Amino acid sequence: MPVVHSSTAPEFSMHNATFTGLAAPSRGATETCVWRTELAPGVEGREHALTREEVLVVLAGAAVATVDGAEHALSDGDALIVPPHTPFALANPHERPCTLMAVLPVGGQAVLPEGEPFTPPWAR
Image (tube, rainbow, N blue to C red):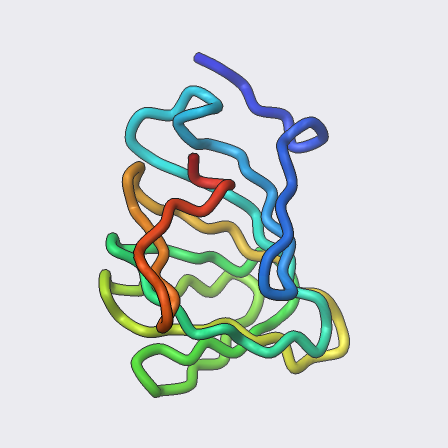
C-alpha cells in the first residue's frame, strides 16, 4: 500500500487556489482521487462542473459554495456533495484561509463553461 506524504505531494495552482495531490493514479490510486485545496482569503469562485460526483470536506476555515445557482455557507467539518454535471463554485469571502479535502472517482473530469472536459493535474 503506497503512502503519499503531504510534505512531498505535488502542488498545483489554478484559479486562485492551491491543490495538493494526494491520491491519484500517478501516485498509486486505482479508484479514488483525493486532494487538499487551499482557498486564500478573498478568493472568488470559478464556476465549473465535474463529470463524476465530488465530495468536499472543510478541514479549516469557511467558504461559500454556489451549487446550481444556490449559495451554501460551509464551515469546519461540513461536507459538500456535488452531483455530476452540476455547475458549482467555491469562494472564500472571509479573512482567513479555507482548507478543504476533495474526493473524486478516478476518471472524473472537470468542465469549465467555455471548454472541453479535462483531467486536472492533481487527479492524474
